[in-house]
Amino acid sequence: MFTGIVQGLGLVRSVRPSALTIELPVSFHERIEIGGSVAVNGVCLSARELQPDTFMADLSKETASRTTLGSLRPGRHVNLELPISPNSGLDGHWVLGHVDAMGRVGALYREGSGWTLIVEFPTQYRRFIAEKGSVAVDGISLTPYDLDGGSFRCAIIPETHESTVLKERRRGDSVNLEFDILAKYVERMMRFVHSD
Image 1 (cartoon, rainbow, N blue to C red):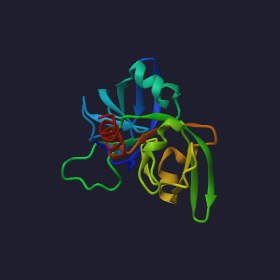
Image 2 (cartoon, helix red, strand yellow):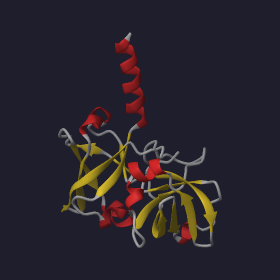
Image 3 (cartoon, rainbow, N blue to C red):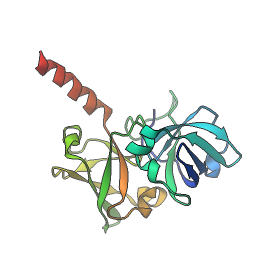
Image 4 (cartoon, helix red, strand yellow):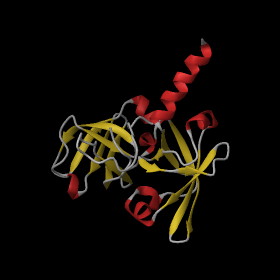
């Protein structure tokens, strides 16, 4: 379980069809264990091998095809977050690391002291997005607004822009999207209520 608060940037060292090796920021070196979970651009992976400054994780065909991890290349930065512990504070929102869909950056532009991000997403997921609700974009907990069919906007504060992969995103880039778990459970319950 994660919160969508990115804790550091990793650097992709190598990508194989079934594995990913990522260089870790110094703050992560003593905090990852073999078998432990790490959210990489919002995708929950398990560390299989550890070196002093890197970890390697298996990449299933399902994960490679349904997330942006399958198109990563060496030299690219990735958002990293370790799971929360029972006594951790919840600063963002509940994020499972289970990507629902890939979206695209419609725009990312400066506005005042911050930035505005427009994300385009598959319209079948509209029911999971609420004005001023929660969505994880590449593992970043954000608040969507100005919903318009297949897109939403998010205000990005300078700290988030500078400390995440958002500073490298350009129009048309693919992003991982995880919609709010509460919205998904409510939608499922409503479907069962209406089917009776």
